[in-house]
Length: 279
Image 1 (cartoon, rainbow, N blue to C red):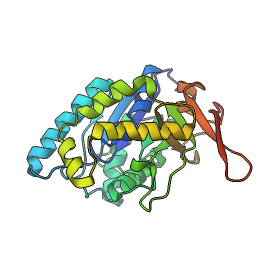
Image 2 (cartoon, rainbow, N blue to C red):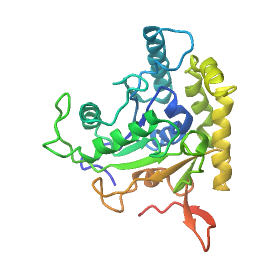
Image 3 (cartoon, helix red, strand yellow):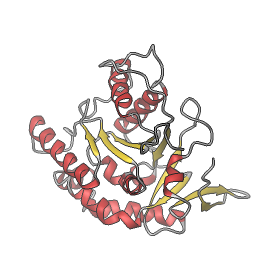
Image 4 (cartoon, helix red, strand yellow):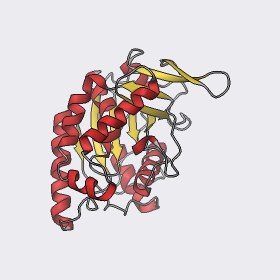
């Protein structure tokens, strides 16, 4: 599982907007750091849409500051946005820019949005990051700016969508859960850094008390696991084009006590057992 140079594995969490990572991914990222991984956080959008009062320059400056503060709490390297909110598109120019950053970071673990989410920014972020990882070793895929290819294996994990449901309201069932109860206090502190979003989320989405909403989502995922008080759920992207079939660095780093994988029993019933470390 170790990289050839025996350096720490690199974990990259990618969200569409500042605070997306803190809502649905930060607990797992914090546990990966505790397990020895080098961690990075990156939001592709600048957060300009997250206000009902401030102008673009004021809100993007504020949200960038909040994101850096959250990253410092996590001990993560922070990477700035490339696009405006609602301007994250799956096209060749956007892919060239995203690919350059992925090649610079050289992640072994990528945490990102669900392919099926409630808004296009989330879904397009997912698509861009997946393709950037897939093309990381292609010499004829030219990045902007140009960056050399890399051949590190990478595993991609998709978080549950916000609300644990897709845009049509269908519940998304994860492949496995991660017990994030031990790091919930720090996860809460990270989300609290995004102070500008309290009023906006109350007004735009009826999300009264966004910190409590994050805890509610974690508790709901915990109930789905039937074991953990607070959990984050994950789906594994196919290994094809990314790594060997048995490459499961997240599960291997966090261990069987922290991860539960889904096991489909007879009929439609799904049960969970300690995650398989080999495949």
